[in-house]
Image 1 (cartoon, helix red, strand yellow):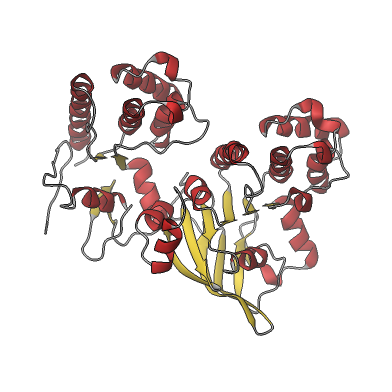
Image 2 (spheres, rainbow over the protein chains, first blue to last red):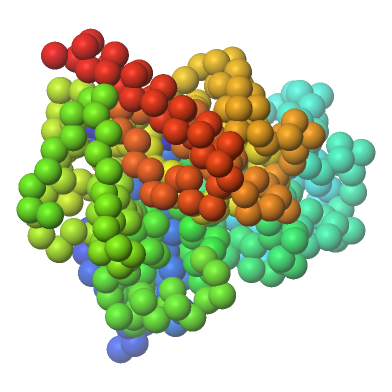
Length: 262
Length: 182
């Protein structure tokens, strides 16, 4: 997965922070993410991990700090200095966002094929037949039978909806994908299938991923690196297996020892 | 242990009673456990990397091309077949796809993993079968450093002999690597 060791980060967070009035969302977050790297952000609810993800995806404005992103043209820009049009273009092309609840990530009134094709049209796809072929190909890659292309996501199971979300996000070949608890609403057996699918696609496409999860087993399976958050701060960071097998902070030790098997 | 060095083609055995820290040392070398002090210098081509202080992605790169680690325990990944696990370990270290498959088949055969199991994920295998898949995975890759943590524990005599033979093979390959790298 490691391409070059001397390349520049794809994304860098610098002293990133967010206060909601007096209340702390997160603060002093610093990290670099390189292409092909999977970073898991773990912590309990209220630890600030979802706030952090929203900041990185520019859905929230920070109260401190910057997020620098290396654009496709090689230029590095602070995401919060981008124009609205530039930001939208990033969101539709170079980024993906897989939501915990598929209803937030899909258009439930549009067919499966339409959900995938929409992203293609956003990047200039115009030829109906080709869009449909690509959509069908992606449905196949996420293990949805191509015969279901005209069905609405409403008729899909939870696991299928998550797989459809993944197809919709990956069809434009993004370089960075945000994932917010992508498996937590699913049964355990369905989770395993989805995790395996994500794992395969991430390594095949060389994606950079920032995944927020409270599930340490998910972090173990998917991520290279881990950041542990507590009360809005990053308290521990490192290689995933190092943090999980040899946690330094008492809080991380508690997190690791309070799950059945990670 | 205050100071120690291992050369290409050399095999160093850490002995001692359980609890002495043998596994911890291997895990520190692999970057799985942290070091409180001291250095672990690993040669990667022309570069020397200190595992104790290296960035996570530097350690991941070392694990890709320089260091392999085999423990007694296999961490099972859902839905990935035994053959893919072993061949995948080889391709991760830079071995070509075709060569990786050939190696995987050879290792699984030598280690007496029945062919009917190759296409199945090892989750449902017996402990011994899982361990042998794990050893095959560890030996499939081409890496100058191989860290083995009790690789033959709980194997029967026949399989233990196979593992010893395979490790000898690796040592000879390591010596060859040495001759090419001054």
